[in-house]
Length: 380
Image 1 (cartoon, one colour):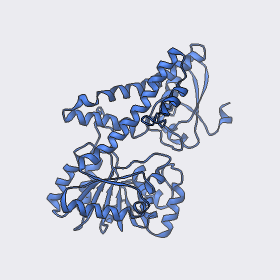
Image 2 (cartoon, rainbow, N blue to C red):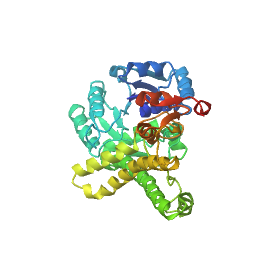
Image 3 (cartoon, rainbow, N blue to C red):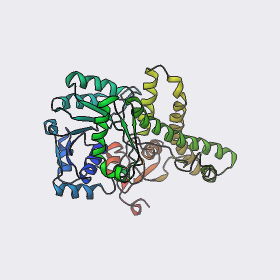
Image 4 (cartoon, one colour):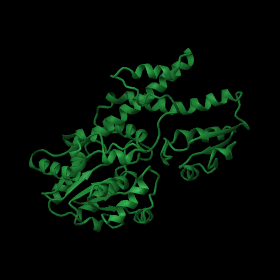
């Protein structure tokens, strides 16, 4: 199939590369000229295991190209919207300017029978709003919402062999046509047995927000238990092991630590709370405020524990922080708990050195006042 991917950040770049790997002819569109140039030259603009190699492979086939011009999306059968939805400044809500701008620009280059597929994590109600805009301009236009479930560090696997597909589609014949086109896009993984679920727009939009909220809740829950373990003498790791044997709970995401960060969980749960509040059901998600508070509190608690360990004063103490990214196998330093803790330690007088196998450049741009070393020997 001929496919365009609008937005070539983390989600869009991985999606474009993997669709080309599946055999489709793909054009990636992004307004960032440097990013487009890097991708076209087979240079991944971020670290994701296996991406550089796969990018080079599919570019050599001629099935993948990148462009800064939306006009190059013309001629595609399916258009994926993969632009970001960051947290709005001064607010919990998602900033929808990029999604709306990309959608409006794309309308100028649609052709009869084209399908627009949203993959961005958006507030519930977005798909209905965009579908209304589409129908006024192109009565036969199709819109679907197909949320992504990528894990940084495993994004290629999660795209080529996901654990499920969710299609948010309209009712009736339009929905049938949209599902058929998506089935053609994902024919290879569907043939391998990946399950798919067809829903209405609202359900598809809520799946990602609900999933991230649940995972964030598990992380904050075990971190709350860690605080209880500290004052009772219990072992939080063994507690998590014991809880994990219960199949209703499971062991995954029950690892006590400094909390979650990155570009998804923090902003997604806040945007979820904001949108539900706009709809008048804010009491349903009040627990997420505590989830968020526990998560932020872990960073301050780590600083307090460090101060206690070094004699109740951080002044002049030499401290090394192992890891700058928000998780392993990534160079993503957005809302990184490790960097936040490193900065707090430095502000309180410690001599802080940070090391990371992939994320030093990004960390240095965010916190230039910290000292960085490429490997552990330099921080001894």
